[in-house]
Length: 82
Image 1 (cartoon, rainbow, N blue to C red):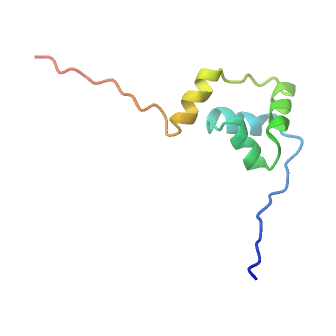
Image 2 (image 1 turned 120 degrees about the vertical axis):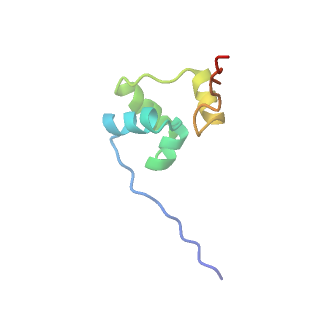
């Protein structure tokens, strides 16, 4: 029989303001990603963000980040003068 080991991180609660801002704004993680990283529920992340008055992204911005995790895929092409 194979033994299965799970890596469970200790929950870091209460969620501190600076940690939430770092993960959400600087590292651009989604709330589900923050919950996974901190080993807590998505609802707890939402609750702490509301409690800490951290402004959440719009639905369109969250979707854009989800589909473009490496940043903006578009670039402005420079036109050479003739």
